[in-house]
Image 1 (cartoon, rainbow, N blue to C red):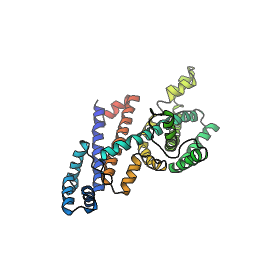
Image 2: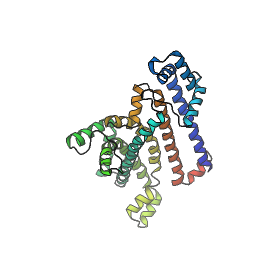
Image 3: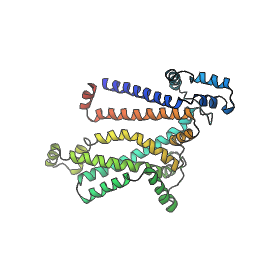
Image 4: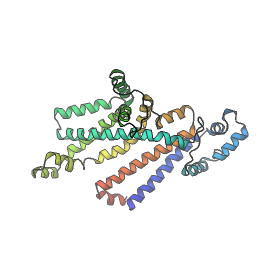
Length: 320
């Protein structure tokens, strides 16, 4: 319990630091623009702008202004978009689920492909199959995600006409087949880079695990190879994979921004790009806060999962 409480305390601390930095950077030097845009557009009077600056805490120092912003954010008020006059919380509520689905699908596909490939490469270490999987991983890593996206559109949409080039958000329960078709190419584009990283990492750790004495004992007992690989070798070889799984959330967010642009997906990434072009500061601030919260939560969850898979870590980390 102490371990969990410490992790939650660190979570809150990291979120406060990151959101404060985001507020300070985005607000610095932009208070007049924010006030004018929020009050009544470019035609706002100086009195109107001054009142809005006071109401939003933009005439305070950074610490006081952040405190006011945080108080409003805790009540669900992240400000209002300059461009659409729509509450930022409403905009994010519409956009975040789309991006979350894309990133979740990408992680699931990456794990479903990487785990069997990594286990197979480790079991066949030094063979031609291992060389093929390893070389393929290096090849995929060498190609940027936006290039993979363009190639996927060219091959599967323009040439083969198997999948749509432009995304239309169709609910899974409304039409499961069409939902899969719409998300297939974006998911494939976003997940291939992760597959390459996961395969290389899992193969390396599993090759070392298969040389341990307890694996030799399991083989001497006549246990099936599949049982040894999946029950005895995979679990202790997965700690590095879990660490990278948490870290790649940031990579996924960056990749999702590009993928959403390629496939015209109305997700969080496209909202951020549009807000940056329009200098829509409150949208950027709200999006940064949501991204930071998601990233930290995932990494804390991964840290807690360590303790589930290896109870010895609970005692060690509780002393930290």
